[in-house]
Length: 428
Image (cartoon, helix red, strand yellow):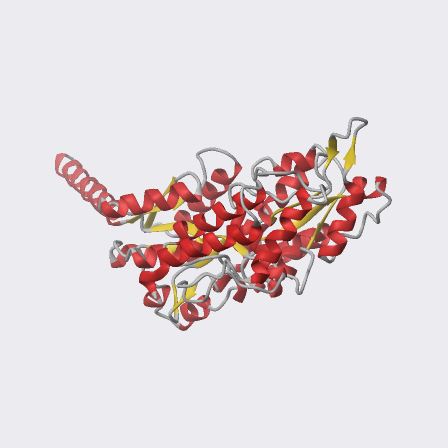
């Protein structure tokens, strides 16, 4: 009996040792995701990670909620210098050149092993890949991507004698409708603005919608030149400034990005431009019937794309890179891309996601969900260059100077171009 007991103890010890060895052998990866701790998005990501780990028991994923996009890129670059970079992260698509210049990331092409892997790199909408590829290589995989869309209050349209089912299709129509929608009290104080385009947070992004509609690009494909002082760029800025200062149908000065949805819900603005990423928020919180439309055109329709891509970091071991690539592929399957779009309002990033039963049912029930997708053929890459944050800041500073009346649009864009030229000179 003692011999048998001793044998069983030894066997149990060996089994436990093997189990511990297997746990130690699990490939561990940290995953930086750009959101503050808490809230519905973290619950969704936590759920995805738990599901992934269940299906891939050899991989242990630690999600790190790293704050805003700005916080995330800062934390990643700091961790990189300290030798503690994550293995995978969601970072703005526009930070691609910065990550390449810092020698921080690996192209996904280096991780491809099968024909299925190769096909995966071509599974996404071309508009989103404009900010994901350069130099013939794929550096980012689209995940939470967006375009700007127009939201309008159908009750406000009805009260102004406008067709509640018809959004403005051109710049001229936008101005005409906004004029009828702007309401003032007996003292002349505005109680409802006709249109509101936010100019804090991401002013360059909202402005790029106007420049795209005026058929002018803000930068070249290599990220080494900007065209801030192009006459068509100045014309687009003049239109934005005139909505507020000349026509008085748009709030003057700087309009807050964060409060724009709330202003819409509270009836302070009848039409707003903001990310399609706000779609779920608007659907849940608007106390009135609303519409969602593609942005109006001047010379063409258009919006910049926006949002975050997956990147995999060079400091990861080969095993960690493979595990990170597996996570990225898993998170962006057609079914999961559809689910993410439904749960958050971001655009499902690949065409086959829109063919899934879940997405088809969602669009049938809520047709506005397809507006951002339908706008993609008209979309251009978001402003992205080398030294992107500094080059973008030059434009943001110019936009805010023009919107507050400190400079004319022409002078503001001339000064922004000079600053961008100075910064980018080394990359030409």
